[in-house]
Image 1 (cartoon, chains in turn green, blue, orange, red):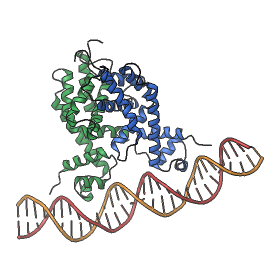
Image 2 (tube, protein in one colour):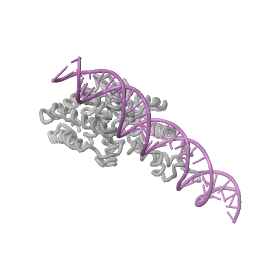
Image 3 (cartoon, helix red, strand yellow):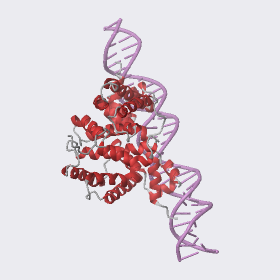
Image 4 (cartoon, protein in one colour):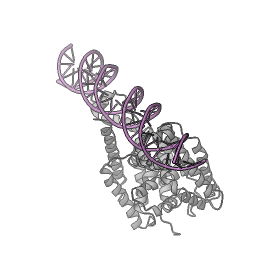
Length: 182
Length: 182
DNA sequence: CCCGAATGAGACATCAGTGTCTCATTCGGG
DNA sequence: CCCGAATGAGACACTGATGTCTCATTCGGG
């Protein structure tokens, strides 16, 4: 039979995004397998969440790769990053808030990813594309926060899924205020 | 003796913001009271969280009142709102993500507050101050998300507390991109 | 100072979730 | 088709948290 490990993780992510305290039994049901099988593949709840985090890290890293953050002007690179991140927005939002709300050591992998996003905003500032009165660290956090908010807004029907990336990108880059040149 | 109910709630908020799954025992310790006393004042964990939500709603409502959202230009009203919200940013971030990550009916009170924030963004659009290609619903969600992200960034030392309101307001209103006129 | 009210400490039963185990059944490659 | 591997169903013990209770102690207003 050979169970599809990633398929289970995706089902778990979909459930945990809605209900962070879902039990192993609920996760198993959501994945369409028995609790026993779930335990056979993940040593325990912690292991499952850590595997989920690993999956999120890999997916986000792929998004970073595909966005080619070093190429072109920084603003376009940010737009590409948001577009590539869209498929993982839900799981990323879950992991972001989970890391904030729950104790326990943070997976080292995030540091590497944070550094790449951080570097993108630094480049944008050095090239004169981004304002220098907003720190790169804050822009990084704001990006995560907006992605999470966007994913939730879509999930609850307050924002159309097709508008998600544009809403996030436009707000992050351009803000809410109207400008003369648009 | 007469225990200060709000003081307990504030301690609970401070703890739950860092660790959303803190037990009644941990909350009691954090508040400097015994678990028995905590149970005497709040029927159970649910009741405590609901009381916490009520407190957050009241505080945020006061911030909305004090910000006088109907007066002056909309952008300044947004700045005033963010300033007034700063003292409750932590608890607000907790409640925002809690409402997204945990099941259970949402407190009706949020609708009233959401409507007021929503109306502010509508007014800004009607007056030509805000862009019309970002929906008021999204701007509302983005405001909450940025406040939560900001509170976490301050908590973790990535952003200085004194910069919080400016960082949130500037990003929400002006975005990350540099403009010619500043 | 005194007495009632509030608190702290701890015992206790209960419950939900976890992790482990067994055994029957099902799947699928060879 | 057959046999080993994987799964499903369920029993089981264990843990941590919850909610209730009692009793001694402490507080503070009158």
